[in-house]
Length: 456
Image (cartoon, rainbow, N blue to C red; front, side, top):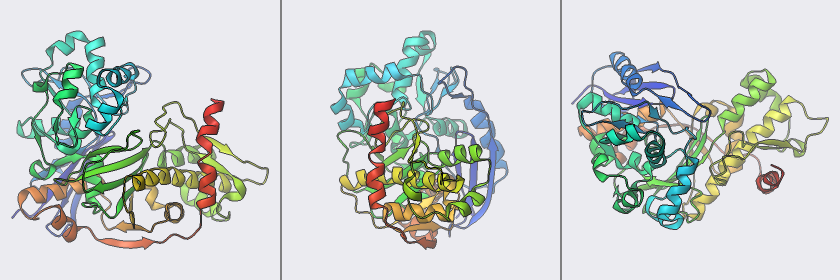
């Protein structure tokens, strides 16, 4: 049996790596950063070679062992027949494909697209990027022979294997999520050759998954029950599903999970800890200091509400033009009040996702919190109260890389399956119970988006 199991997460700002033992204890961590290119407004690109070089540096800083991979989803990597990269990768946060998303909905039909793929066509997904290349870079498009996602390009460089897992493939808009296979119907409608797409495996068979599925596995979300609550730059509420289902309006994302024969639904808000980073900069203070000042205000901060739509929104409002606001300001409000209202507004945005998960039939009893925002004790208390469920923190804070390391252990046979890996490695270190009643304030929050939309 190997002494270490390695997880590599190919992220947007850098590669993170972790090595764990058979009990899930962290042996070592390493990271390496790289640049994000924005060649034009709304564009976001990276060089796949940067991912590969960073991965090599990270692996040199970790004990040797079988490697599992996670990474940023949706990014488009195109290779020619010799396996060479044709152009910089177009990333998940690239916004150039508005025309192509409308084209996909028209060609496939909105309802049929959601039924097959579990999602609506959004600019972040992979398929619109392929159509954009066909329209704007026909010479490059003509040379495409292979399409990969970011972490799968790193696997290709590590092993020479062209492959993808069902969890990450679910974010391409080319995947039949219920059948866990490429959708011949969608590919035909979009005139995308099936032979460009790599063979699909279960995450546990190939030790790989998209970052959200890997992160959820890393905090113990292998089966329906607990949900993952991520307070990262974006906010995510993630629930495992026992069978495929979908929201007919596609307000939630539905993907294959990293666990075989299991699916997951998740709501994504675009500015969670991102809202905190923005307001911290505006107020010129550190989060710990602002938390102290915010605690002087009672829940609701005397009627002050914050709409956390600083970068548009995804769940439950798929609206890239949505914008944020403070509503209910008075001369009494100070920066502590602003900070508390911001923390509460993000928590209400997360509750929007939780309510949609409940509509899909998810019975939510506890949340597993992670992400940079989970370092704030006050924010955890507010989120637990706004969601109306206890939050738990796990011992590991290594996120997607930790989940990838668990997948490595499963594929290596040290864990019998995902349930065994979670039972042996994921340990809860503390619990935060709901403290305040936010139901009335949440009902007021629900009025913000439609009211502000009329003013924009």
